[in-house]
Length: 443
Image 1 (cartoon, rainbow, N blue to C red):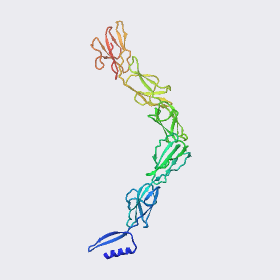
Image 2 (image 1 turned 90 degrees about the horizontal axis):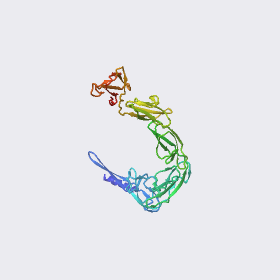
Image 3 (image 1 turned 60 degrees about the vertical axis):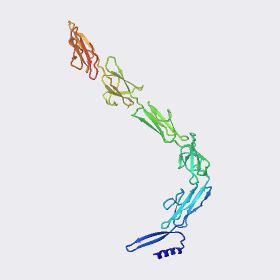
Image 4 (image 1 turned 135 degrees about the vertical axis):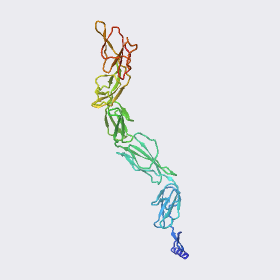
């Protein structure tokens, strides 16, 4: 076995292999013996970095080459050590414009990787001016702007001055991707790089004669024909929206029927479409309760605007519609706890529903007694003039009862028909009705 290894080594030397060799040793064990085999792998040549270490006053493009054919190469610029799995794969010359250390390695299947080589660069200079993809001029549509620099890895800064608003905050932004210019503007740019002198600030002057995007109107309301909030939006950013009520800044409330007109315009753009919106606001009825003299209950009065629409109401709890409810003609009297709902009809369109609840405690009417002469003896018939359905009167003959009649007990007599009394008798009367408070006693 020793003779085999020595012979292999001598053969490789005879072949002119001047590079270092990697040694791989494998061991095979059988029942009777153990065999050790050593394989020597050729190491690929180290890559060549060009240009080499030095001080430079301009950006560089670094190239890698290797004498060993068919190799792959990786490199790093962050100070780390490249390997077969770490680092950037080299395909084309690498542009550098900053002081750094460049490290590289070559490798190939079946071969030992090369040694790591490195070069150090101190680079400085003055940045060349950035280049715009568009030139100053007049354009009929928004345009895309691209800014580039010939210095690898340099940073491009820019800001935009709106010619319409004359906003010039000089708020430099870092350029990362192309952007759209929609209105007349001046675009400024410069190039910066670590250790370098910043370039001049250059600019382009753009006049945009485009068309302002569509204007949209949204009405936010609880129900059809109710007061609404008007929201206006334009597809073109920063467009100025103008209505027949003035410049639009934020949603506004419409309480009366109007015709809304609005348009939008951005700088030198042609104006947007004009919106004409008929906004119908149907006012709800106003329900009020007015106390009446000598009558229990209150009168409902509806008060509206000068259009005098048709009014429909309900008192049974249902919702009034064009086909459900009673047409209001004149004020009417409410004698019980009642929920009144009403709508106004404008040109066959209903307003939203107005609801009023009469829930005050009602007091029953005081009985109105009438004494009618009867016969020659001076007797009289006693009657109740305001007696009506659902209204009850109890009376007591004070000659026999010490106290007044009580509607909640058996005391007193329920009045049903006129009755006869003696000339000098005294009676007490009380009126009451279901759901009402009884009135005071009347003698």
